[in-house]
Every structure is written in C-alpha cells, then in structure tokens.
Length: 276
Image (cartoon, rainbow, N blue to C red; front, top):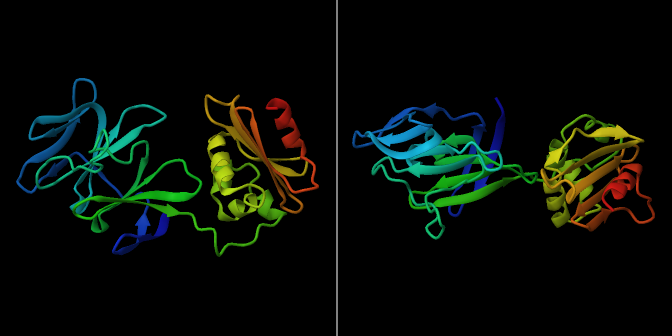
C-alpha cells in the first residue's frame, strides 16, 4: 500500500492524516438514516443508481463509496479516455444530491475528469488525482455546508541541490512524468525556464516515451496526444554535471531553456529540425 502524509490547511481548521491511498471500498448498497436503500444494479445498458427502486442515474458505470458525514460518494464513469470520471455526493439524510457549485451548469457534479484516490470518512475528506506534476492530489472537504477544494502540492524546499552523475542517470528508462514530479528535478529545470514554462512543458509531455541516456545526456521528449505535430517538447540533462536544456514547441512558437554560452545538445538540435 502507498502512503502519504498530508497536511491540509483549511479555512479554520487543519487536518493531518496518514492516508492509505487505496483506502476506499466500493459498496453496492447503503441504508440511509430513514431506512431507504441506495443501491446499484445492472440496468438495460449499464449500471443504474436507485433509491428504493427509483432510478436516479442510468446508462453509466456507477460505484458507491461511503464517505461518512460528507455523504455517499457516487463515482460515475462514462467510458471515455479524456475525461473518464465525475462525482456527486448524496445526502444520507434526505437522499438528494448535494449542491457543490451553485453557480455552475452542473451544480451537483465535482472532481470532473479526476480519478478517485482515497476517501477518509472521519475527516470528511475525498482525495482525487489528475495528471499533474505539481501536486500529489486534489482535496475535497465537506464542512457540513459547502465543499472546500484544495491541492496537496509537491514541496520543493528541503531537498538536495541538483547534481550530475547518478542523480541524473537514475532516470534512465524511467517515465518522464516521474522525473517531472520529482522536486529536485523541478528545481533543476527551473534554473533555465520559468514556472509558467514548466507548467507548459509538463502538459506538452503528457504523451511520452521512457527517458534514455544518449550522447552523454538524459533525454526525455513528449507531446500532447493527437496534437504531436503542433505542441511538443524535449528535455536534455547533461549527465556529467546535471546541466539542463529545454526546448518547447507550441504551434510555431519556440521556448528555449539554455545557459548563456552553451550550444544546444544533439537532442535539441534534432528537435529543432523536426519542429523548426
């Protein structure tokens, strides 16, 4: 099991928990406080969510998680790849969906396009995850009246200084996403690009291959799926001293992360030929 120590600064309170990231159990039935039964079952085409036989949601893949005082968490999967999940909360007293965002077009829906990571009923806490190199998770806390949304950021302080050698070579064959999530590597790349460009780099490498050492550099490249000709990027880190080099191509606009006086390494030259 994976564990994560979480410190959440909320409006008036702080919650600290040693959270088991696999700590939620799907259930097929929940009995509400008035005795009515909330259940899932197979309908004509997909799962149906029913309250005492009345269909609330149908033609979706639906799972239930008991989220304590926050209510009953309803996970709805639509079968798509780009945005597979959305979530709702059912009030265990009334049996109605809670209003999460009153001013939105779908006020009962939250954490759309995110995946369920953990539920901590005692803290009214729901953790979700979406591709993101700057945070471990999104946090949703029901305070009894409304939903507080937060982020568990990846801290970059109290980490070693970026160096060369094994600190770079350790990523040979690794998923570049794991490298971009590492706070040491974030500090390394922020020596040559801005915070805004790091966000863009991360997204532009969401479709990627394993990093490889070539010509004395650790090389990682990627693109936005289905838009690889228009939005892509490459990172090259010199193994000997840990110096990073970055090239981001965004529909003809090029951003370079170089040290003054340094030539582009072979990986960036090749990238420039593909995406001039």
